[in-house]
Length: 150
Image (cartoon, rainbow, N blue to C red; front, side):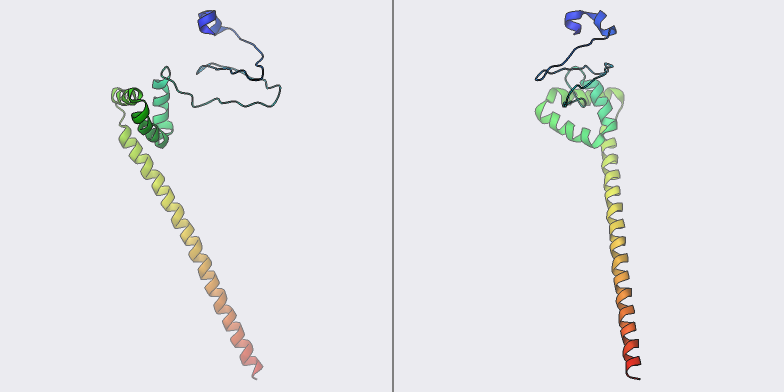
């Protein structure tokens, strides 16, 4: 749109009807509203290109740290230029991604461990209740048997 309409279009409302089979790209940070006239599919987030990589990396490394770690590994294999750019951004920003990632992984592991411990305690409580109920059943049946022999 900017390419064909110039900078002046960026400050105006653009209205159009998207027909079946057509694709619309809305640039990052562009305010927009959509009125769906029929069932539709929209893919609207997590778009990253070389053009917005810096902003996306800076946001992702803090907002989705573990995903950013996986992404960084994939970039190293598939887009070494963007991998190097991410490292350069971290260095420029004084951001120790390895430290942040390790803390995020440790936090996730601690959360998982806490969940396992909670589950184990519930299981032990159920087993204790079953044992207590069995003891009560045995005790009642012993009482009944001694009453029957009287």
